[in-house]
Length: 165
Ligand SMILES: O=P(O)(O)OC[C@H]1O[C@H](OP(=O)(O)OP(=O)(O)O)[C@H](O)[C@@H]1O
Ligand code: HPA
Ligand SMILES: [Mg+2]
Image (cartoon, rainbow, N blue to C red):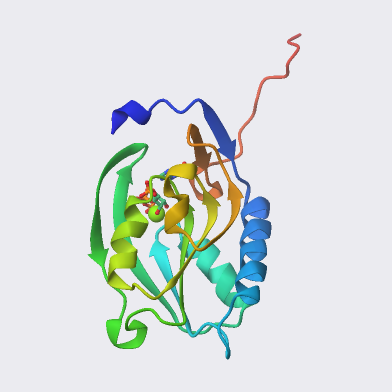
């Protein structure tokens, strides 16, 4: 889907920022938890793993599973493929379960995931408008023409000063 590229803007997220935003997500999820709390978290790998760990820690959820979906090679999108499923004996139809991902973009990944766990509550840290309707709870909306760069894909490096010598 190369007609979405190049993205006009970049949104660079630090570890500190993703930690704060994932905690904000947990706070919201606590407010809409079923009686007795969420019974499990399913992280969509790989990007959902860091936010899912933070949410699970904040909400004291010890049952954490993963679903592996591959949609992108760098910034090039293809049809989402489920590479690994969660333990469906535990997750069932998803009732009382939180699905966590770092972001929703077009919503195609979540479409595939929701079909497997239709009663689960879907949470992402960031959401772009095209995919927003696939998400039950998110923290920050980012415009469709923005590419979000996560800290696990970046490194600190030297930059030239504005005014050279
Ligand atoms: O809403 P969509 O347009 O489907 O895009 C969102 C998905 O794409 C990215 O994952 P990716 O497939 O790049 O794999 P990764 O998490 O392993 O980096 C991101 O982490 C979401 O899971
Ligand atoms: O904006 C994005 N950033 C990182 N991964 C992504 N996968 C889909 N959209 C994005
Ligand atoms: Mg992902």
